[in-house]
Image 1 (cartoon, rainbow, N blue to C red):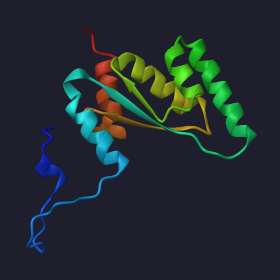
Image 2 (image 1 turned 90 degrees about the horizontal axis):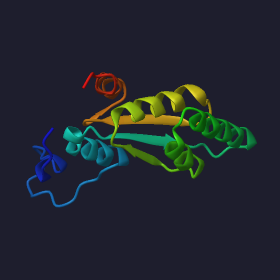
Image 3 (image 1 turned 135 degrees about the vertical axis):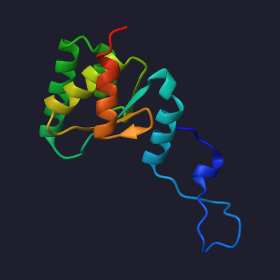
Image 4 (image 1 turned 180 degrees about the vertical axis):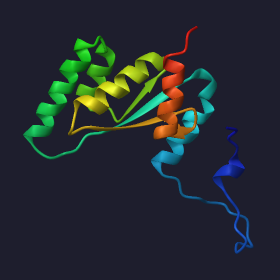
Length: 134
């Protein structure tokens, strides 16, 4: 995916003047970043930490313990600090962390961005790269 300024400012037929401002949301920014870093195989996990009650904190603590148990110490430390975005430069570790987080915690959500993709297409692409034989 090639990123240029024109992709951020799409023209519509009703607009006679040049567009000088546009709105972006976090997903636009993360998708653009993951697309720009696609050749580097950078994966981004967007973490969702609900602010509810003690059960959420128990779930967070249990997830951190599981991550440590799987040797994902850096990920565990960042999750314990409630980092909102985890950026990986190794597809294998991103795949492992993504699946641990997704399957081991009911209270904490995670969205995957990879190679300019999000959701199931990103999961398939990351799975292929994580399990590719070098």
